[in-house]
Length: 126
Image (cartoon, rainbow, N blue to C red; front, side, top):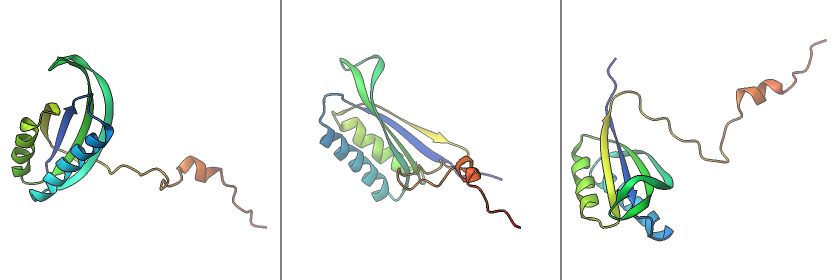
């Protein structure tokens, strides 16, 4: 059984940009993937983290992970836009082989865990 490849792009934004601008960048890159004819599988904001080494005189960065599925043409479009942007200090796209990432569960819509369901007493038959 062969599994379709998908792509994961991790990019780091400058730590000094406002939260609204971070959201606009996330939306812009997600929409760019869709406009290129690909499908966005997952988009995760990893938050502000300390960098292993300074990049463009920054010691921290805002990490964002974007998983997408397509023919590969969307990668060139996405990386060109990131290369031009002054707010993106580093990016990397990796082609993944294997099962597609499981969709994240949105808080508030979680199904009960099996351990909780097992604790519910069942009525005894007499």
